[in-house]
Amino acid sequence: MSTRSGNGGGVISGAAPRRTPTRRRLFDAAVTLIAEQGFSATTVEEIAERAGVAKGTVYYNFSSKNVLYEELLRDGVDLLAGSLRTAADDTVARGGSRVDALDAMIRAGLDFIAGSPALTQLYVAELWRTNRTWRATLTSVRGRALAVVESVLRDAVRAGELSDELDVPLTASALLGMVLVAALDWQSFQPQRSVEEVHAALSQLVQGRVGA
Image 1 (cartoon, one colour):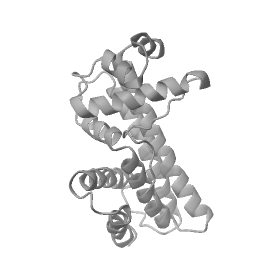
Image 2 (cartoon, helix red, strand yellow):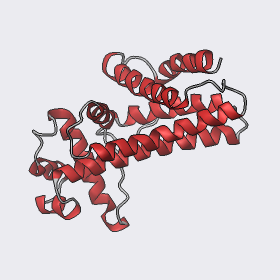
Image 3 (spheres, one colour):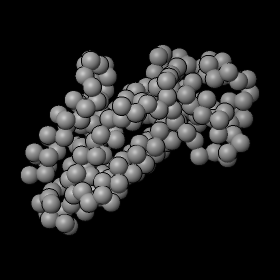
């Protein structure tokens, strides 16, 4: 199992290199605190203290707590999308089928979530809320992650590996949702299971259902 961060965060921003380490600490602190006590209950002072920086440093990097959280979600989902794309591309480059690429994406998603459970919890929780100021950003980054899955599904349809009657957008949403929910259930209620066990179970669904 891959590990990304010992505190469940591990997100990296796209800021200038000289500011990246500080923003990274702020993201890690924020994702942990918000997962523990909720967004509203988490203060900028607490984030700064957990990150080991002055309160002013938070506002130097982000204009508000809302902006910090919005950027945290953006970076986290972008990293997930990147992990999925790399897994798919590497599989195809080795001569694997597009269905094999989907299977590799499932494993990559499980590894990512295992290393960033708090971030995943926050992302899933935000999907159900429609009144947040960052809703448009969340919709945009979700679309980027789904686009990666959709592209592999379309390639599989073109290659004749999947039926041309496949509803690509809905199937992509179902696959991504399956990985997110199954991984969170695994982390929360079945932590004794290995990532290999969880991957094997989800792989059977893809290979036996979608692949058929």
